[in-house]
Image (cartoon, rainbow, N blue to C red):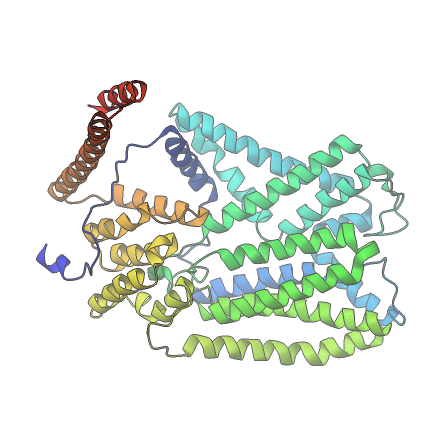
Length: 505
């Protein structure tokens, strides 16, 4: 205990209540988290060698980048001298499954497959909820299949699945005769299922987006201690979710807006992509520099391609597209990689001038990712100091970065619980709620010292009783103050007394 007291900083030593007295809403939330954790825990195999992880990431992100590139040009847009680029576009469009189906006249089949995948995943989720409630082992039978579906829908299958749902929505809801997105010679009759199916498709598209958001939060790891074994571990998911919305808006733009508002929609996507790429380069959300470079290059390449296409559309000259892409793209991507490398290697001194908690984490990351414990005292004290000075203690991610360090690097469960006390007043965000639950769940399953746990639970119960008694005393004082008034209100006094008596244990 004396050793721990040196690194508590100036914070309260109140112990985090692992065994809360949750409301029904809290119990439902935790119960849903347990089910989602079973379905979404599909992070890349951390036993895989680092070089293989990097190669896998490069291939997947390259395919997704090509899928996004196919949506930059639309058949509805007429540019002079575009024909030399048509062959290249005809080749890269085959990286997206729904485009292959569009060329072969099997769009309706791919729509059925996509609907089946999403509905099957929803069914498995509902089945898991039911079976877990009755505590049967049958629930584990359903885990493998939705995980396989999830791996596809949240990686190279997201854009094709979203595209086919939006296409069916468009041609089932509005009066269009030809599917211009794929081939003007194909009639829309065979995917026109009526307005009911059209609205059902847009509902599935929203569900698909929601599944991907939860997948990003559950399958990634914010622990700094995992930086050396999992290249996808990152400090926060905000920019990753922003990248997901970039793809979502690009699909909507391609299907719904390009025909009439091409320049406006593509201009919006360019600005969005440029800002997103700049944020990734400066914030470096991933602990691994290679992963930061991959994500930065992907968004930068698409943004530059959009800018080149807008420039050629403005000049009404398609010949410059290939020339600018060949000469400008490599130069720009090299600059992006060099900037990421420079930012990753920069030695930043910790001072008091922090804009937000993300900048603080970026500056403390070298120490947080270092598993050597010789400087832990200085690190914990810095967290304690800046949490009070900059009010970072009201941010869940700020607390979790420190608590994860205490648990996974320092191996100190008591200190972890002490740090988690700040979560009570922290503002609620979905990622923070989920990561908090994951850490608490790990703490509960990692109890090694029963005497220490009993002592902590005793302290927690004592604090709860103190708080409860204090509230009773305050209510009693309200009653006394009302009695001492010259003309106390009898009705109010009676109601206060009844309320106070009902609050007693």
